[in-house]
Length: 294
Image: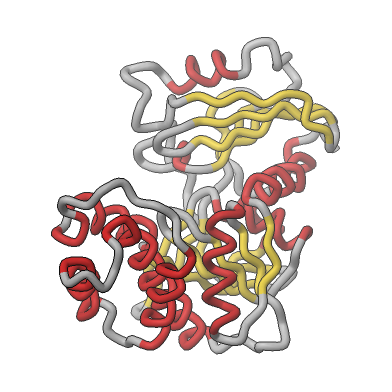
């Protein structure tokens, strides 16, 4: 296996890099030079800058994320699901000597059209660190992924994080609100409402009405809305996937987001293990390092 390698998580708005020697991270760096923020700079120049002093001619660079999209360095083709984990490492796109982009995954069916970039690398790590029949990957968009030890069978995407942001910043719900404060009671109240409704759109205006009428503190609107949206997402997805309550899911997320999703799952009688997103990503890259070894 390649003993020294560089892992890159290159998204739309930021870029993170780690230098590894075997399983030890020697150094990490980050930049705001996401693929939509290159400001005319060439991707290879940005890569050279963030890895300065790290590379020699034999050090491979393995990249994941939006760098492989039509807005990135070059398009790394999607692998259609069902997609074998073993095939991900054999379908890398070479963009420069010893520089590779990991392919994304896609679903193309009449009832489901979906894509992912970056999460497939976290899945590679998660299946080793916390294997589960269903992975939940919250963020701006939340991925719900059905997989086993050999392949990703199917996945869905729910735009909960983005919708929360848009409603608070660009809709009447968030108009004129003071700075928002964390509050578990408000989140739990939204959660309870979210898991019970099949029609969340019909409940959104009530969020505004609740604070206008004095039934919801104006500084807790974001918490209530978060609970409403996450509760509805989790309830609708477990209805779709019909998972076994005896088998824990794996949540690949930051501690803050994981805690919110855990509360929703607990309310519905499900359990999940939590895995930090960076840990899953780094383990996934490490599992691919042998694919580029000579």
